[in-house]
Length: 321
Image (cartoon, rainbow, N blue to C red; front, side, top):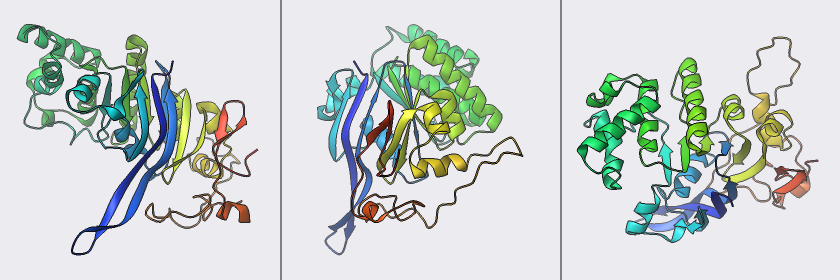
């Protein structure tokens, strides 16, 4: 049984206008996304800025309320939970935030930051057990336990992200949503954090929804990759298939933009014309057709379904083969 099942999830934000703040339109940040994640699996989620990646991740764990659709986690419909039931279920899924500088409370020590969730969910019998658990978590993410008495401003970006990971691990979750956890870090530190996440996944059987825009990082850590454009899923397959044999024109453009080490490489760069359309008024038909280099008349009026092109390789494109 899948650990996480998301079915036709939509997140629309109202755009209000006028004296009486009437709803004029909606920003369609996530528009009918379905996915599943197996226990211990990493699903990579990629796409350019503004495509809805972070909104999708946050709506799955109810940090943002979905407009419609369902989220089933470990056999439980979490979209129907509220209050204490939702708080209790949140033990099972956590989030690592993008910015390690703003995601930690500067007025709290590292021990207080990590121990807060332990207190909320009553996971330690007493203060001694709580302190021992905090020290254990700091060791697990490669930090000295004596750091528990220090404040976030005393650490580097990579160390702060390790603290964020320790905080997420404090409640022993089954799934962690990683919202671009290495994008604000130096390349050498990125590798350390990615390797740490992989090691923790093996040790604790964690599943990840790994959100990123760096395809090289996503290919390294993910078993499957999902590509989003303007709130919709345009491609889904094993990470190697998406990164080496992309079927959707948008995925092909993303892959072509990845820097290549070999200076003699003959790979052709695909330059997409124009800008990403507004999610308030997305194009009719295929949302990618205004920028697609191979779009036909059919693409302007008929929205393509996400279909299986080859075994295990799905794409939302009329022309994909």
